[in-house]
Length: 354
Image (cartoon, rainbow, N blue to C red; front, side, top):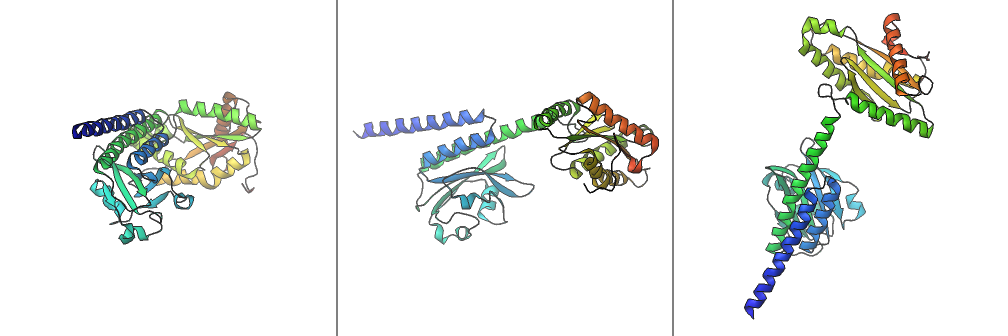
């Protein structure tokens, strides 16, 4: 009889492990990260018999944890999804030690007296680090309203799920990075021309659908060939990289910048009239680019940029005509030395409020 009971326990344990592995294999191949983490979390709560849980990913640069999946937690607690990892805190120790941590009898633990760190009803907490290739990517939390210790086999199951969650995170991040590189110019950090053309087509469709204007700006480095000849191609690359960074940091979050080719860059400014686009470049963007170029090296002659701006629909109803209008405005600014070397396809009020 005892042997039969042992056999039943072993079979149940085997089926449970197969179920866990089936879930794990399914999420590893899924590149939808938040969905994969939600599946892992549900299974973790199921095998541990806990009532709530979450998965937070670690961002080492900012030293923060941010919740990407949660279940059973009150809205008030998850309203602040990201928090700083304080040195010496429980989270800091879990991230550094990379070992599963179980805490029961929580009222006697200092960590649980901080209402910003944990939900007040929690009486037991399991923290499982998500480690992949010796790098801690985040933490899986399962918690319960009863002070209790989980069975050893349940903790092992959580560690298995955590290891597969870490693989899924790594795969999703790797895929995201590959996708980012496929559309990004490696030197300037801006979008590449191929992706810019796709973005411009999308913007035309959106603007036409909603009846909105948008502007397009071409940015050209003045006498860039002479600069390259005088200081070398490495110096030229440094200048382009500095310009790319200046554009990324000075434009609005809705604007889209790309390297158009050689020393030319292009910016799509959604829902922006010609006059407002001019004001943005005159008051902020061009100054930022000029500062970036001047700071490259004190012994080099600084180069400047010229900008040409045109807008849809007045200056062009398609990509070819709009880019051509911006290019003509740029060439006119170079030829006639327009104020601040910013040319527009039509006259604008330089003193108007953007």
